[in-house]
Length: 335
Ligand code: AHG
Ligand code: MN
Ligand code: MN
Ligand code: MN
Image (cartoon, rainbow, N blue to C red):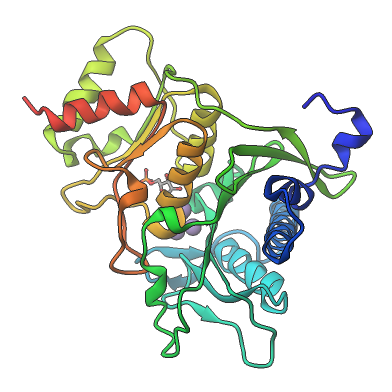
């Protein structure tokens, strides 16, 4: 950003949200406070990750399996709890829904209740934790519809266009926070000496096309023929390069900045794919569309999908408009 140094250093995510809302009404204040809490959670997780090898009980497995059927890492448990601790007494939320919890966590009666629900993937890319590679957190905020008396969370099962705020934190060489309120995508870098996320880039746009295709080719024989034909096409044509880190947030962030396409299609074993709609593919689809990119299941926009369950999975093809369209053309015109 071209702002003078000092002025720019005051543009934290919560301050930026107020500017984005162009109002100082109650909802603007709430969204700004939500963003501030998300930033705090990110800082607490970044701090723990940076000391992982130096502390006991940070790395390795927790010993249990989550609702996804995955072996849970200690860092998954810690990060899940960080978001609960940071939001529980904020007065901003009524529920928290996470990859790591089978059912939403309802804020206890003795705490102030808000109208928002935070849906989140506390650590995305858990397989990278113990080898010190990039991981992320993904967040999505929805407004509660109705009263949810029976605490079923049924009103959460709406399409991704109901998200009012979405984004992610990437714990890489730098810790970066990316968010959108539906008015463009904005990028902040954590300045550890300040303990603040500082605005780095506004209105990020995914290039129309990029050289990267990002997918786990270990699933090659699990895919539909059409996906195999797409990958054979990029193998045969100049100008493509494969990048895959095993952590969605890192792979997506590369596509956001440099263009290309990330795809996690359905497989024979998991026809709906591996990634979860409410706190992985829908928030990233929101970001992608706000950055002038595309996010598709292969046949329809991810943001149009109406989930039938909290942990529902969806295929995802996301990135540059041209590259997503190319993958869709193979899917929609199989040979
Ligand atoms: P999580 O660690 O939150 O369970 O997510 C892991 C996901 C995602 O980050 C990544 O893109 C994908 O799993 C990698 O799956 P494969 O190992 O099957 O490629
Ligand atoms: Mn997981
Ligand atoms: Mn994840
Ligand atoms: Mn996760």
